[in-house]
Image (tube, rainbow, N blue to C red):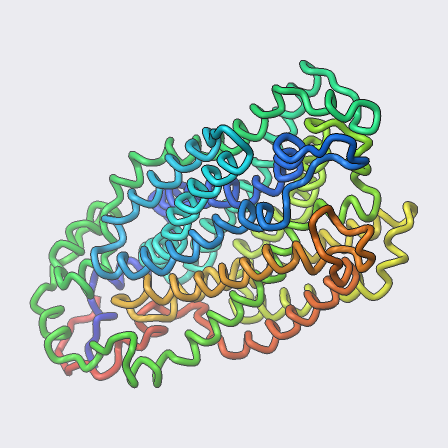
Length: 530
């Protein structure tokens, strides 16, 4: 039985030894994810500062804070843009080709990162509106990078180390979060030393120096730099062989491109691909009974697990500064000036990234092709569930100063197992199990489901984690269920993710054509083995 999987160019890619072009592709695709993570998470470093600068209330015992609707918009608007971008560019990547739209997403990210830092206006509402406008389009570009980078890396990789290569691209997120924290520490330290200010409780007006307005702008803009540096190389990458051969139906061009990439001679097989395409029954679309029969449960699995994971993951990231304040790791806002508050929040986030986030990603990179995707995802969700309940049930115990380190340790472990677990595998698997002509679209749908979860986490937990006592809730917020109960909710969500993992197939060690079942229902053609 002949199939698209028997094309010499696919065999060459699946059996290729790890080469320099693999690492080049990881860096080129990964720099986009560095910018993605930097831009999506650095906003949590500066939201407290934005409140102090633009929403100060004279005579208030506490520093100014963003009103609930503004805070939700600033924190969540990029996630909304990302969701829309994932669906749009995922679809476009299957229609026009991965390469044609790859540069558009990167340039959009770079331009909007810079524009976000240049958000100006005559009043706070105008500044925040401009910031939200550019962060939406920033998210739109970021969204496109998810399905395109994953699909390109999966279609370039050999089947032996494919999971590790795709995970390595995603792991650049860890460096983006780390880079954002380190840069914020540096810039806030420089400004804090240069422009001395007393704490808010001593000098409410003077605690926020005019120069603080530069700090958040610089932090937002710098994320564009690494991505700009890789733009030229992203444009030089050839289209993937699987798209060129199976979707564009040009096997000769696929062989020519991969001959250059692999530095070996690959025989053109246009006649064979024509026979396969003409006679194959494997041409069903996304909204068909055949797709539902073959891949419906798989798509349900990838969307639900990513949705549940991102509720937990993004809510943790976006309200971790509030957790650190609650346990005393960050002083009360009134005891700091505006710039020093950025420093303390950034230091906490950087320690979490350095000790748990980044190691978790790279554990996945090195072990995913040995252990398999399913086991890593199951382990990750299970451990996140355990640690979340371990934080939540004795929460009052952790709030005592002598127990702060234990709380941070358990909190770090939840991040470690998120990244050595579903945060990486939910990105990897959708790029491996769907047909080439629908691969980018299905990855985009899965990723968009995740961002819907992120929106639930980012918006919902701003309200949910508020103190149960209205008098102790942040200004403008209604009473919530408290951090303890919010953590219990997250534990339940992680447990549901554990159950939904059983819908996702194991793709370890199999070719893309085996997993997508593009070998089925194809004509009998005599093919010489390579």
